[in-house]
Image 1 (cartoon, rainbow, N blue to C red):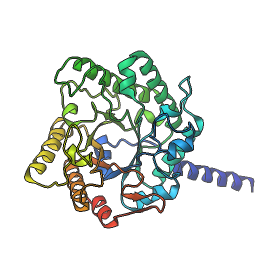
Image 2 (tube, rainbow, N blue to C red; image 1 turned 180 degrees about the vertical axis):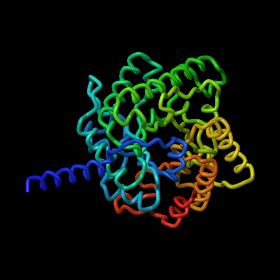
Image 3 (cartoon, rainbow, N blue to C red; image 1 turned 90 degrees about the vertical axis):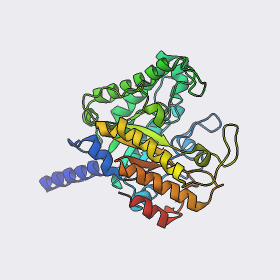
Image 4 (cartoon, rainbow, N blue to C red; image 1 turned 180 degrees about the horizontal axis):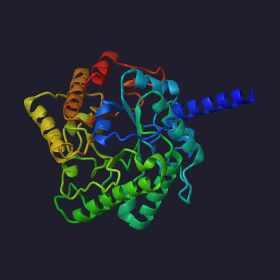
Length: 367
């Protein structure tokens, strides 16, 4: 009886470890890993909430921007719809103490959700999101690097036992505007601004690889300068050295911005509601071909970590056509497109169903 009990306990322990996403790393290349993801989606405006107006509690951060408390059922609904990857934006510094320690309850919640994502069969891409790294590094480089390093050291320690389907992303949309204004019409400070972003990405890789466990071979996602395609293809942006050779590059795609990002006229542009002209397709294909030439063709896989046609001023058919065409253009070049989705967006989190199921079926079937 005692031997049987020990065997039973061992089997239960192994089952638990597998269900938590623990596992070995394979020798699969990051190119193949990214290509196998298919189409992904973001769990946006959830654990990435930031600002000074809500209580500094785990529940307040999770729900501040309109999300219900995330459950396993909610996560499973994304996987059941056919998404192969879920990007998990996280703002870690919002609940840090003055000594740079990540709130334990928050870390526990993130780990729970990571487990649900992996259990569902999706890849989880976990990042540092609204942590204001551009501002921090522009104001006090040494203090910012200390904070950034401490954050990733804690994350790496907690998640180093997790298997291959957990991917770390260095940061979100970061540029050092306090040193170089990309819209200012000058290159003053540009070299230094790029140097800082390159240094952050190298520090990220160094910390992950030195943390041991499965992190030694984990697939990593490197945020390009402002995750902008033109800036990512600038000769000043450098991919970090990685002894494991397992890095992909991230860009975001909200082009044209006057269609994708605004619902009414603003100082920098007039809101548009149409898309699909020959010029539109030339722009899309030209930019994606540029990424393919600079990265994919050189063995560096590309993840379009965010893309979306946002706002309620445009016809539904335009939103769907733009989204499907962008995803198709990405997959044709081996990129993984990850749709930006937030509470009130494509997915009804309260009922764990997509609002436009036929559209989502078309999207997730793109190969």
